[in-house]
Amino acid sequence: MLLVGIDWADDHHDICVINEQGQELKHFQISNDSEGFLNLLKEVQTLEVEAKEIAFCLEKSHGLLVDFLLDHGFTVYPINPKSAERMRDRHASSKKKDDRFDAFVLADTLRTDRHRLVPLAPDSEIARELRALVQDREHLVQAKTRVVNQMTSCLKEYYPVALEIFSTLQGEIVLTFLKAYSTPEILSHLNFKTFRRFLEEHHYPWKMVKKTPEELYQEVRSPKWQMKPDPVVQKTKSRLLLALIDQLQTLMGQVKQYDQAISELMGQHPDNDIFSSLPGAGEKLGPKLAAHFGEDRKRFKNFESVQRFAGTAPITQQSGTYRHVQRRIACQQSFQNTLFQYAFVTLRRCLWAKKYYQEKRKAGKTHATALRALANKWAKIIFTLWKNRERYQEHIFLASRQQHALLNAS
Image (cartoon, rainbow, N blue to C red; front, side, top):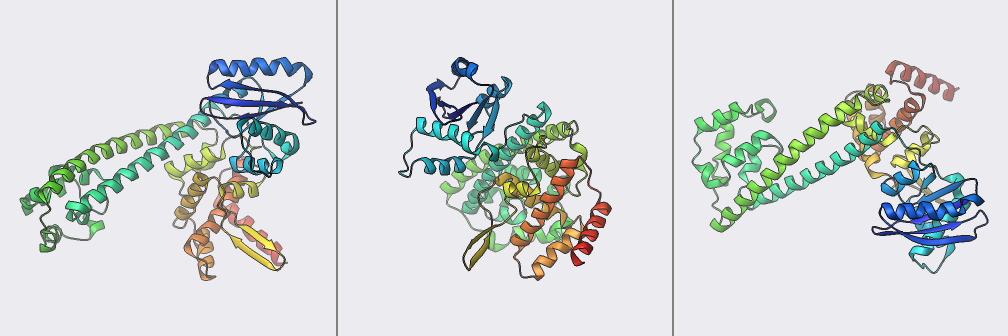
C-alpha cells in the first residue's frame, strides 16, 4: 500500500509518498491548479504498479484537490490540523516545521494511525449543495450582525433616540423610518399624526411594545432626547447610517433568498423526514442539523463520537486524586452552536426536555451547563434516528426512556 501525505497551501502543495515500512519513496511539489493535479496523478501512477491501494492524508475535508482525488477513486483521509500538529511533535521534539516534513508526517500518520481515521465518503449532490448553502448562509448572517453592530454604534454617537423607538434594527419598518428620519433635526419636525400614521401603515407591533402611540410619541419627544449633536458629526454619521442601511437591506434580502433555496433543497434531501420530525427544528435548524450529520452512516462510529465532535460531551482531566470535568473546547464550533440552539428551542416544545433542563438547574448547574447537557442528550437521540433512518416519535422515546430507567433501578 502506498501512503501519500499532502501539505496543503494556497499556491502549491508538498507531496510525500511512503510505503508501509515508512520509507520515503518520492517527494515533489505541485501547483494548486488543474495542471498540478494532473501532475500529482501522473507521479502517483508511476508508483501504482507497486501497490494495490493508494491512500491520501491532508488537513482538509473539502476543496478542489479533495474533489479531484475522490473523483479518481482514491481513498482520502482528512485529519484535524491540531491532531496533525501533535503528530509532528511525535517526530521532532525540536518543534521543527517545513512543508516537506509536514507532508511526511501526514503520510506516516496514515501508516501508524489509519485505523483511527475515517475516510471521506462523498455525499450526494443534494447533500453537498445543502451543506454549502447552510455554511454560506451563516457567513451572510454574521455579516448582517456586523452591520447591525456598526449601525448601533453609529446611532449612539448622534441619534440615540432611534434605539429607543425600536427593539431591533433588523426590521423593514425600522430601516424605512431611519431612511425617512435620518437625523434628530428631521425627527423634531415630526408631528403625532404623521408619526402614528407611519407606524400603522407599517404594522408596528404594539402588543409586543406594550405602549400606546401617544406614550411612544411622548417618549420620542422627551427632553432627555433633545440633545443637539455637533453639526459635523450629524452630517457625517447620518451619511454613514444611510450607507449601512443599504448594506443591511441587501444582506437581509440575500438571507431570505438563501432560506428559500435551502427550504426547497431540504424537501429533496433523502433525510428530510428524519430532521423535519424533530420538534422545533423547523426550516432553520432542520437543514443545519442535516448538513452537519451528512449522509455517510459510517462517518460516526457511535453517538459518543458525535458528542465529542460537536463538543457537547465534557472532558475529564484526572491524575491521581485530582479530577476535574470541564467544557470541551476543541470541537466543530458550528455543529456545537447548532445543537445548543436546538436544545434551547426544545425547552418550549418538549416537556421532557424542559424537565431535564430544570433538574440540572435545581442541581446547581448554570444555564449554559444545563443547556449543554440537554444538547448532549439530543445528540444521542438524533444520531440514533439518523443511523436507523427513523422519524422522531415522542411516545416511543418516552416509553424507551421509562424502560431504561426501570432497568437501571433494578
